[in-house]
Length: 517
Image (cartoon, rainbow, N blue to C red; front, side):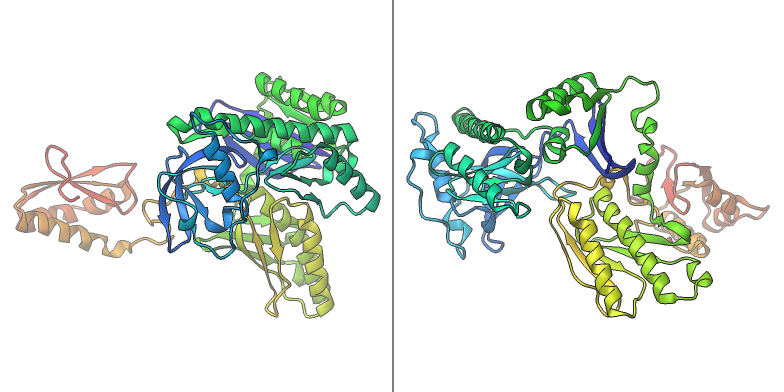
């Protein structure tokens, strides 16, 4: 598989496209102005306790308060708070390796037992602000590197489940034991299998240094809390850290400052891969040059075409995402219905796995596959979907097909949808897809004119309407406008406005003041 990372930089945002064999599979957008990212660590101030939710709202400097549930405090929250308190101005500060750890947090406790309004807490962003919701927080703080994830207040060494070799497990545990101080645990990632001993040791020490710097920042930020203690690296570098391997053929960026930053980071983690980082200087826009702009447009499409006439219909609702698989005109030319249905379903599964990553669809996803009558085929389809989703780094669960041919997938989303900020609700239909019947429009306008003239005594009314409605009201010698003037003994002026909705009507007086608000 040939993988490419294409990074387009503008003053407002950084767009990061991950392609596999020239096909766009992931699109990430990092807003330069927000400054909030998953993994960032903050010194927050508790604003409000919500006993009914067993949660609290924490001010971390975001326009909306962040949310932390009791289950996200972590088992060693009391030890973390003891550390935070020791770094308040005027206090000496404790070291994790020399601390006596407090009793673990009880599983069935209440958040009011650990948090109070005004309390300072060290928290980490687990989920970015999405739509109207503020960021989701965790107090179970960890620091991620390329090969390891450092876990303070722990003494355990966890290994990735993908590491199967017993000899490799012993090697990695030996390295961790030789480097980690007391009260520090670690999660060893799959990438460590290909790394040398000194590389893993360097990664661990680097995360330890970041932790000590984070603790030192508490004393500086405490007087003016909330404040940021530690910033996660840029989204581009995060993707490189988590994904860079021999399958990458090139990393192309069109901004010189970002190019130097990425090249320096790649040199640090894998010097042999440094030549694949390239600065784009072409006159054609970067995404157009790599045929990414055209693929991004599919993000907005309701219909996604498959081979030989089959297609998907993807719809997003407030509660869930729904995907319908259609065979199109294939069944008309095929004799074996079961085989045809299986072929379409397998092609659809491959595209659905790509679309879930590309659109970063989260929550519940319901897929209506074409009915399969053989249990063996249904099982094979489920296994294929599981295999295709294995490369998706988002946490997900796939349930077997029901007897109605429906597959349910739950998928975690920690960042806003790539297309969420570029769509608006239609001001005319308010998102329903339906408008008032035009045959009733004249009656509605007349009722308002009656109200303004007979009840409120207005002698002049200006109607601001769309060209379509203006033509309807002024058509003919005895137009509706003239009939209403005679009937209500008032002057009515009809004004066309291209920006007005097709059935919207605004009522103004001579000074252009709204008569109906």
